[in-house]
Image 1 (cartoon, rainbow, N blue to C red):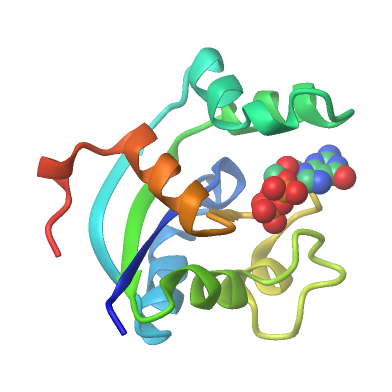
Image 2: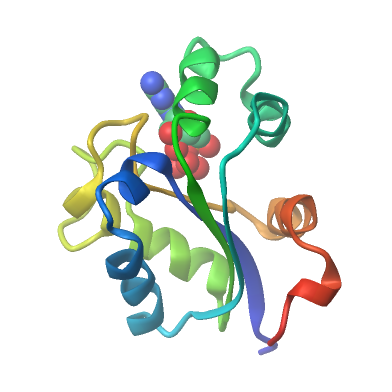
Length: 140
Ligand code: GDP
């Protein structure tokens, strides 16, 4: 099976609490490799474009405010079954429903400030990686 790539974001609630290293270590221990990474403050248009699928949801405005409230650390993770493995390590969207030992169960503040984002399928992974990284910035 060919290695897969997924887009991961360490969200502002986690960077604010200095949890970047701890979260990256969870990925690496799960066999995922960081093949690209950048830290940046998302602009409002960038956050709105990234979460465009949620534009009609009641939490959209709050989500954009939150995602632009501090720096994020964005990475491309690579590994066998990287997309589902990353989602397993992250846990459910709502930390109260996330399994013990997952990032969201251990670190998320609430359903919105839930510490991490991970692509939910091959098509979104490809699209989200392209959104933040050029081919030259990814080194497997
Ligand atoms: P994910 O794939 O697990 O990140 O979940 P979704 O794609 O459904 O939602 C994207 C992001 O929107 C989540 O990670 C949360 O930060 C936020 N979110 C999702 N559902 C809710 C909700 O019901 N309320 C609030 N306030 N935020 C939510």
